[in-house]
Length: 327
Image (tube, rainbow, N blue to C red; front, top):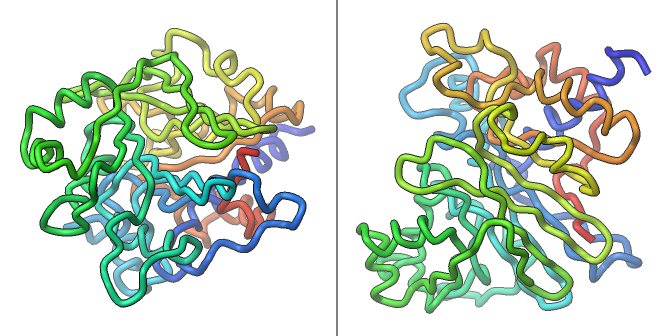
């Protein structure tokens, strides 16, 4: 397989995940095939960086186009873990776009009609305390949804941060949420047939540490890493971490180092999509791994469906790419 064709195969997510969870695409997830109706599945509820698309205060070409055309808007990166056997839906990260993302969840999840749903999800797993990943948690509080002891899974440092700082401490005090501390590297059973292993990852940990999640279903597995420093800073090489993993949804914040002429990307430290494609080429070539990208910055050319980089991926992507079965 040529390098050109390999890059095209690896870049499926530039169209697949970037196209997921737009305001114009909030229809119900297509029903699964009968043979897999009870299989756990993963649905992308959002795929862009913490500030969303359009980004507040930005008048770049992509943000301006997204304001003019709702179909170009994108929600902040989040996943829903759907477990048909139990009827449960779990969130990974509670974003500023939580209201719209709950609207999407209600297209497949039963909910009361004509009154508030006080339990729109069955729990939340938090990766870290950067704004796109936990601000939506506040909407589970007394002034809004007013949940009752909603399970919130977090690292000990993240849990301590929530207990000690408002408004999060009010969620704990009023028992809107029930914190459940996770130990990195220790797998736990989340739901019927679904096991989750939190993995500590290096990142800008100003308030809390940062975690990724390895989700294992009865037959398949998925690694979700929406936010991290470059792969070289990981204590174990990424290809080694991905050994035995079927699908990887990875930090694709920036495509290449020339995106932000007014910012020094070495100080932002995210991995580049181009570098990740090169790093994981052998695993993808072997057919053992599928790679998708998420957490795309508003500057990322992968968001431009008409751009050269996205056209390569769009021709190979499919509608079903918005949900990856973890079965």
